[in-house]
Image (cartoon, rainbow, N blue to C red; front, side, top):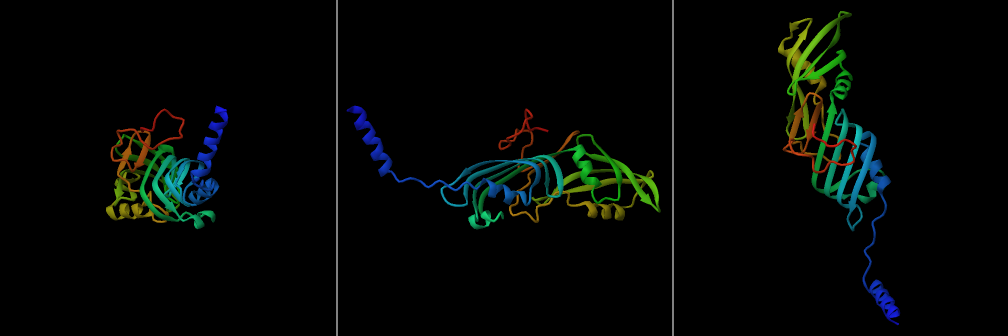
Length: 241
């Protein structure tokens, strides 16, 4: 008898309490939409949908070997908080942001990945890079009148505004001879910005840069000495460079 009364009570609660409609499973649509501006070997998503179509309390993305902003990076983390996406555009595989409360990014590129970037569309061949933890150094060869000539350069990364990253050269030598400033500025124009978001459907504010002996880090985090609080999905023990 008691069991029957308990079952009837539960049934009444289920009937009387209005059900919140579950959002459609649009994981494939999200992947298609984000893949249009994040080309990566692997993309992992962790989402917390809201109760209305196209709404997300949080979207977290982890990417490996990703092409972001023109640069190949080893790992990248993205987080959107309080995001409203156009649901019709999303079904078509297009990412159209109606509103987002906060957007964060954290990427890191190895010296090898930076070498790949500097070799793309660059007159300098066989680029070899290294870092002392502050500056990035490089050497390679360039063809002058058809003759391979040794090139050496030294430079550092800097944020342009809050959404772009530039590489500024402080020393450029060809066959040991220092190059004049106009030639340095021309080469900078050819490679900059090394990280841009001008064609992205959502932009992320860059607050921190770091160059170590092994990694170059671009982040929305103002303090790169602290662990990344939104980085996830990696196999390594931590995300500090």
